[in-house]
Length: 113
Image (cartoon, rainbow, N blue to C red):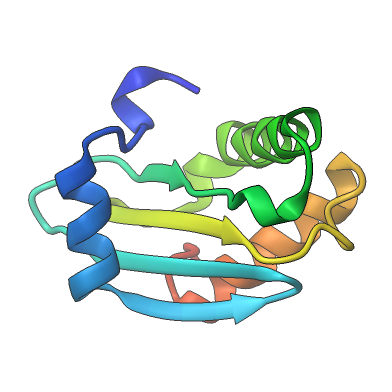
């Protein structure tokens, strides 16, 4: 994932968790906010150790990053969000992960029509 599209700072995560909106779908939680000053969507990932051992968590993060990389052009400008998987059942492969994430973005209203 390119650096410009990534949320990295603790204050950015805290701002989204504190002031953002929340949507859930398919074992994922999406917390997001819209920033009119931004020209591109930005994503962060927060994966709990409760999901399993490190290789499993890293695979989930890689899948989510790849879905974002290939579909970020479909998002509205200024969307900043954090995706938090709560269960890994529907995140087995790329296609199922992509379907869940696209539906989550649609429910949040950050997917371009």
